[in-house]
Structures are given as C-alpha cells and as structure tokens.
Length: 479
Image (cartoon, rainbow, N blue to C red; front, side, top):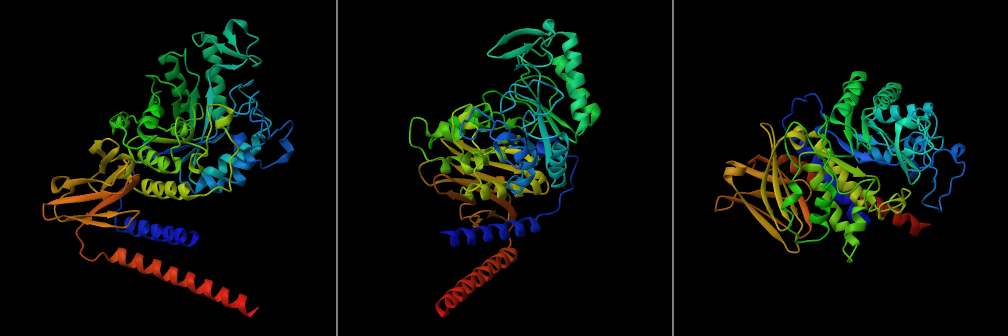
C-alpha cells in the first residue's frame, strides 16, 4: 500500500509539473483576496513548542489550555506550508481566560500561554518568508467581563455568561476600538485582520475600522465572521457551511444550491465546510448514520478550493478531525495521522496557486444535478474543467465542441487520462462514484511528449525503488 501511494504521489507531481510547464505563462496582476486561501488554526491547539509558558496547562481537559504557542507554529510550520494555503489565520491572541481566545481581557497584552511579542514577531516573519500571510482576529465585543475596559460602565450594555457586550454605537467605545486596532496592526507585519463579534456595529463604523487598517498598510485584508454590507474584502454568509454540509454529507443529494455564493464578481465570498465556531464537517457527516468522511471531505474541499471565492479551511480538516462545536471540535493536532488528504489538498492548491485562471477566471456551471457537478474556469490563456461526482454510481457528462473548442483534448490532472472528441462530436467525461477530477483543455497533440516524459520518469523512479528494495533484501540475507 505504501509503495502504491509513493508511486501515485510521484506520478501526480510529475504530471502537475509537466502540465504547468506546457501552460502559457500568465501576467500576474496585483493580488486580491480572491487569489488567497485561508487556513484557520487555534494557537493553543496546534503544537507546544516551549514548556516555559505551560503554567496551568492540562492536556486531559479539553476546556483548558493545552500548551500550543507561537514557537510551536514555527516548529511545525512545515505541516502548514506543505498544504499551500496562502494565509494562516491564528485567531484572537490577546490575553484571554479561554484557550480559543474568545474571552479576551485586553486589547494590548498577548496571551502568556501563547508566548511573547518577540516570539509572535518570529512566527509572523517565518510565515511571511514562506509566502504565507498571517491573519489575526480582533473581537469588537463579547469580551471577558474582566476585560480592562469594563470598568467604564457606560461602555457596557450587558453581561452574560461571564462575557461583556460593548456599546458599539458609543463614540468613545468606537474611538477606543479604532485606536487599539491601529496600534495592534501597526506593531506586527500582519497580512490580514478578521473582525469578529460585529453584531451591533454599524456599517459606517465598520467602514471606519476597515479604512483605519488600510491606512496602516493597504495590502492588509480585512474580513469578518458575520454578515455585513461594509467594505470588507470578502463577504461572509452565515449559511455557507450548511450549504456545503447538505450537499456533501452523503451521495445523491440535491445540491444545486452549493454554487449559491460562487461568483466571479469584484467581491468574493468566503467558502467553508465548517469553521472554528461550528460543528466539524466530519461530525455532521457521521451524525445520524455511518457515512465515510474520507470519501466526503475531498469532494467538499475541491468545491471550496476551485469555485470562485476564498476557501477557508479549519485546522485538522486535512486529517479528518471530528467533534461537536466547542472544545470537542478543537482537538490537539495529531501529526501522526495518515496524510492522504493532505496530498490531495496540496496538489489542488499547487494548481490553483500557479493558475490565475483557477483563481479569477470566468466561472460557468456545465452540469449540476443530484450530486454531479461540472463547471469550467477559463480565460484567454487557460481553460479548465472540474468535475465532482458525488453520486452512488459512475456518472458522465458530454461536453460539446461549443464548450471545449475545435481540435482540443482534455488532460486529467490526477488520473492522467486524455479525453478526445468522439464520433458524435462530444467530449465524454466519465467519472466513478465519489470521485473528482480536473481537466486542462489543451490543443490536440497526438502523442503527448510531456506526458510520455513524465510517465518515463515515473517508471525510472519505480525501477530505482525496486532495485533498492532488492539490494536491501540481499544484504539482509547475506548478513
């Protein structure tokens, strides 16, 4: 099994390389958030890189701090880097009474369990050096009742469950929040800010905060985890995760609505199958039946990554992390699990990051029926066909020359198949159940030289692998 996986990975890597080598180079325009993909991580739940800040850490109690820190993000940052996300979101990192940062007591001090300002700077620099922006959360309200500002009683509208709600219509509160936000983003080389707990904030005030951040650095992205008509770089829709859950929790589902927020407009939407604030997708899949999440996750993630929008993926999704909303879904990251889905995500992301068309190209739905989704992303330079067969049977779509073009063929990225026009003038795409594939539309080539070179390379690697195994076996016998 491991040998087969090794060969498949080598083949996929070579075919991806030869495919992109054969693609015309595209002029890279100024990046927007539509070019990005976001990986959400909770600092406390990722990796414990330093024991010096482990005061009152309890890894056996999921409601308590577990020891993850800024040093841990750097120590095991390779796991994040190989997923090829372009933004890592590290949540709220202010001093807090709760491991997930949801009970902040300050807008200036960092959480001691996470580390020092110097260690945060090191982590930010580390990811920036690897072409990954760092995004942080800035909660506007719902802070700890012990927050340093709650002494100003006229700033607080109510308290419940140990949390205080600020009066976001109060000019003094607005001024203080704006000043704190500007000071925070000015202190570190952040690439993004997510404003959270925005209920009660007017559009005008949110726009003022967004403008203040952009004044510090106009390349910083500003998003939210709540619905708003303010000038955020990407829209947020509360029902997004439910749309994906209902579309991909099982096969043969009516899933036409999954493309609801997939638009090629000026302002993309955040696309996510779950989030830090919801049940895990895996939990929802298994609830009420023994479905098989490893079949569900690649299909759902492919949709979020390749449809127009900003893919937002919660940490641990790539290893099938489970759990109901809250501490159960915020498990400590397990670095010893199978990485098959990691490879799938990395390959998808590699293609997306190297193709302007897959990020910003024209989007057209070719078929969306009972779990079978086919769509295209195209520009003057490239043309891609993405097919997701979330049904219980082998399924197909026949694409005409009007869609594909004359004298063309389709090259599969993962199964390496070539689809040519048939006698009816169609390009028939046939896909097994619960599978996805990406096809690049290329000129008809006859013998595909790049493919043959890649295939030869795979066999050379395989032969070398077998020779090494045989030699090792002989040495063991001789000894």
